[in-house]
Length: 80
Image (tube, one colour):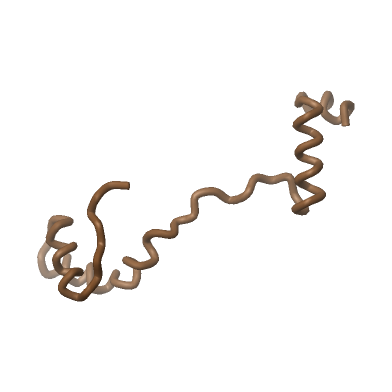
């Protein structure tokens, strides 16, 4: 492992970890990060929200929140 590490200018420890990842997972690539799990619930109401915006251009977030609440959808407008 030391020769390939020198060849690519990385530490032997990194080369060993990458090799272990490749053996365990088939690739040394990093796992995908992020993944949006929060918007799925609101995406189901996209048509309603877009129609509401057409009827009243430039509504506030509080107004949209109230419109959704009337439909029984509880959403927060607080930043994450």
